[in-house]
Length: 383
Image (cartoon, rainbow, N blue to C red; front, side):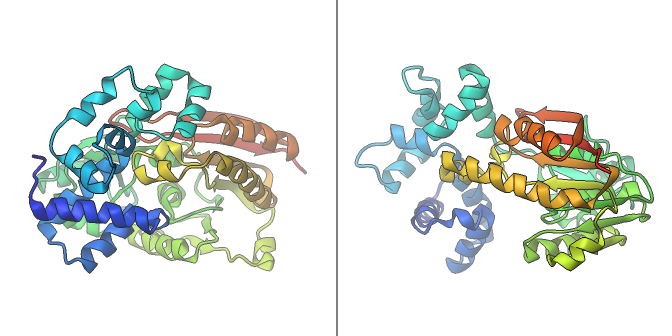
């Protein structure tokens, strides 16, 4: 059953128990499991199975709890999960509350329902309970998508071309990919199609100056880099030094050399005021549109977080505005599906900072497709 053996079942139960006991959501699933596997000397053969089912239990935790024998323990939950499909069939039971059927916290489900209605809310939540699709972005500084596609197929990596992203592929089995020289040499990189589309729809040109203000590990800058053709410059800024270090490594691997790190001190900031054609602000947000990749985040969600996030988003945008040239463009991005973080924020920014909204896009998470995201482009009208 589910590739079950006693060792796998024991590690699955122990890892989940430890994860919630020490509140490891701050680590992220991958980091926690890496530490767990090393500490417990879990064999390579068992790691993929445990990783898959660890995430699956996190996705369906509430429904599994509801259908497990009492008193509720991780042992009873694992017995329920591993020994049959009764718990899964209960997702169709209309006698259960919708949030239980979808295995979402009630307050979070209610927020989604308030914006989209019951049927659409259930559809969104069920999509977010799917396994994420693995997408690749082809580094067009090094190779065309067609050539990368043919090379990977020749190496036995099962890939297909993305319909929306013009540099994207999706892969159905990552194992051979991770061993391929194309991946190791930066010819292709794992990146969701939603992130690729955001970069694709930032219409910067050769010779322009682009600031990625909350750059994280550099995903958007990697998409923009080929557009600048190593002319102009990409500026990277983030408050997390570890993210910046990873971004620098990714830029080097991708062959992008025209980048500059802007330090956090005010003097370095001021040197670049009024110099940017584009400022990209991918703000911290509730992240609901990407819960498929991060199923743990829904269990740590609190409604009062939204208010704090909204204030933080406004603060970040306010810090980024001085970098814009006259007629420069602010690109505001979230992976949220809530109006309060998206178009209502953009309405606030346009009025407060004298910006004109040029374009807005909301992409809801797609079944067996890309993550959800919101993107708006605003033009600076200030003198």
